Image: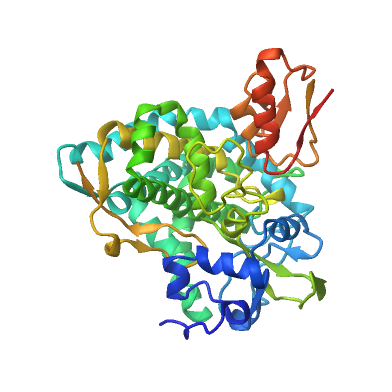
Length: 400
Length: 64
C-alpha cells in the first residue's frame, strides 16, 4: 500500500514518495529556496523545515515542541500512547525535566571509554563477515555486511543471542519503515516485538547478567526502580535506534566510495584521513530524520503551526544548507570545518554517537583492508529504505 | 589563548576531544571537558581552532 503521488512538495510533501526515497536532496534544496518550512495535510498535518537555522531552533525549543512521538505515522498519537514526560521509548520520547534523568542513566554506557572497549569485538565481527568474500567477485555491502554489524553489537550489549539479529531487523522494519500502513495494523505487527522483549526481561530477572538488560532492571531514578514500561521502552529504543541508523551510514559510505574511485584511492593511500571522511559521509548522507509534535498553537517563521501537528525534523536537510556549509552539495572527504547535525542537535543528541562512529571507522577500515577496488554492480539495483532513516538496503558491489 | 566550553550548550557530540585530545577530554557521561586551564600551547593552535569550528552546538570558544 502506498500513498498518492505528491503534487508539490511545498504544500503536499510525503517522505514516502518514491522520488524522495530515491533522491531527496534536490527536493530539499528546492524547498529551502522557495518554501523553507513546507507543509502537508498528510499524516494529519505536518511541517518540514529545511534550513539549518530552523531545524536548530526547533530541536532546541523543548517548550513548544514535544518528543512524545518521534516517528511520523498515520493518525495522531492516541490517548493510549504513554504521555510525556516518559513516552514510549525513553529518553528519546521524553521531555524535560524527566528526560535528563532517563538520559543520564544511559550516558555512561555509551561514553567513549566504554565504547572503546567494544572495538576488538567489532573488528573481529567485521573480519568474520568479510573474509568469506576475499577473492570473490561480488558482495552485497548492505545484506552481507552493513546490516549485521550494529545489530550484533547492540545484541551483545543487551545480552541477547547474536543470532537473533534477523528478528531485530524485522522489528526495525515494522517500526520505522512501514509508516504508510494504517495505525491499527502497525500496532498488531508490534505484538511479537513485545513478546520477544518480555521473554528476555524475564530471563534476566531470573538469572541476572553483566549486561545492559540487567543494568536497566537494576537502575533507579530518585531511589525508585524504573517502571517496567521504562525498561521495556529503553530496550526497544536501543535496538531500534542502534540498528538501521549505523547500517544506513555504513552502506551510504560504501555506496559513495563505489562511485568515486578518486576518494577511494585517497583513503587507501591516507588511512588517517578516514575519520575526517566519515564526518563528511555523515554530513552528506545523514541517515536520521526525527519528528516532534507541536505542543500548543504557535506561529513559527510565519507558519501557523497547530497543536499536535507533526514537525519532520530533517537533520539531513540541515546538513545540506549552503548558509552553513560551503559547497554543501559536494562530498569533500577532507572537509576540515564540518559542524554537521547528523546526530541531532540539543538535548536529544544521539546517545549512541560514539558507538556509531567507532563502528563506522572499524567497519570501513576492515572493508578497505580487504577491498582496494570496487564499484556498484548495477546502480539501478540499489534499493533505499523508506521512512525517517535513509540508507541503502540492497547494495550489490563488484569487487576488483 | 585558552579554550572554553559552555557546559549549558555542550551535548556531548565529542568532536572536541576527538580533534584536540590534548586540550579536551570526555567526562564519565561523554560530555566535553577542558583539560587543566585550557591554555593553548603554540603547537596546539590549529587543533583548538578545529575543535571550535566543528562543535555542532557552538559550545566552544577561544578567548585571549
